[in-house]
Amino acid sequence: MAKRIVSQAEALGYQPNRLAANLRLGRSDLIGVLLPDIANPVFAPILGGITETLSAEGYAPIVADAGNAPSQQISFVETLLSQRVDGLILATVSQDDELVGFCIGRGLPVILVNRSEARDRVSSVVSDDNLGMQLAVDHLVGLGHRRIAHVAGPLSTSTGALRRDGFARAMSHHGLDGVVQEAKGYTREAGAQIAAVLLEAKSGITAIVAANDLLALGVLDALKERGLRCPDDISLVGHNDMPLMDVVSPPMTTIRIEHREMGRIAARMLVDTIKSGSTEVRHVVLPPKLIARSSAQRLPK
Image 1 (tube, rainbow, N blue to C red):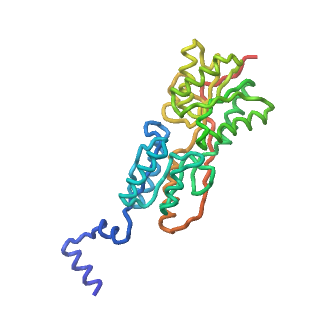
Image 2 (image 1 turned 60 degrees about the vertical axis):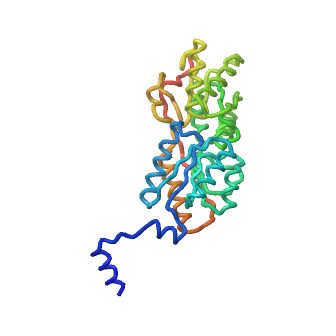
Image 3 (image 1 turned 45 degrees about the vertical axis):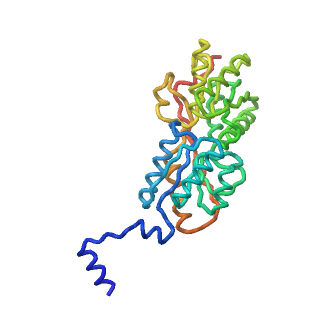
């Protein structure tokens, strides 16, 4: 009987109504993806990896440029809940994140990408921020630098706090004291503002490690404004190896993070969580790589 019905349906050109089936099962095949700043080039490869994996699994992403304000992020998620999304991938989290608690309270599967949270409530895919800073500091020390400063990202984020801590740990390993200044945001403008503070302090620094490439570009702006040259006067290391870091002047030495792979893994983990219904918390930490270019050079003896 069943085979005869299927055969007749095919003969009539019947196509299953996936929307109706999903409504019956309480599914939408939609995944919400929240980014803190869609203009930041770092998020393009992350989103590419997410989309690639979700598409292969029959899901479609709904992307929101949610900013950093918890109230705005929660408002976005409430809208996504009204669209019956099956889960969320968050690149927006702070160390103690209000949105994560909101999602947990509503039973919504969540995976964090690029950033983690201090309370360890949900699964995440991140880069090894401690190792990234170790690679940057080891490289500069190997070039003869001893007075090294760190332009930190916002310490309310895991990337800001962990990279700051990694910088301090790496400097201590070499028996050195580092200078740290926290930027207000991960922007070029914030990098220029903090670099100005460091340069005006006349602390004798010969190299700067920035917590991301946008901050590093801001450092370059501040150096040029003061007639200083990179790397002749100040060597500089960024973080992320976002697109075009090899064509800026000078080409940027930076820490490469596999952002596309990060997005793929986050999407895979979320799909697995949705299908299994598991509440197990898992953390994937990807190793970064130093990309040596011309913005850091050996200190003259």
